[in-house]
Image 1 (cartoon, rainbow, N blue to C red):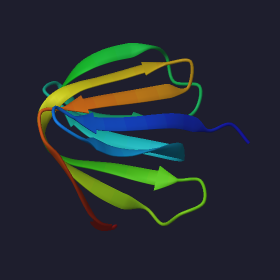
Image 2 (cartoon, helix red, strand yellow):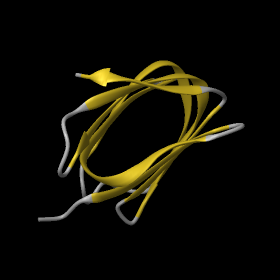
Image 3 (cartoon, one colour):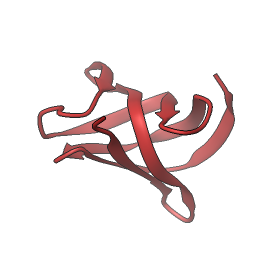
Length: 89
């Protein structure tokens, strides 16, 4: 099964990285849902929750205060102004 390699960092600290089946985020243009095989993209994040569904863990959220979101070759990189891990969704 294909999977995404996800890395989430804030301006001043590492937040999370790992393999995931799904990443959901809110951009300034609307909601983004990323599955393996997604086309390359770069977007500006809006403040709100990211939702991550890891391959081997429970789904969880990350509260972000804006930043950038990129997708290329099943790799998702989220660079947030500030980010805090939330609870399982």
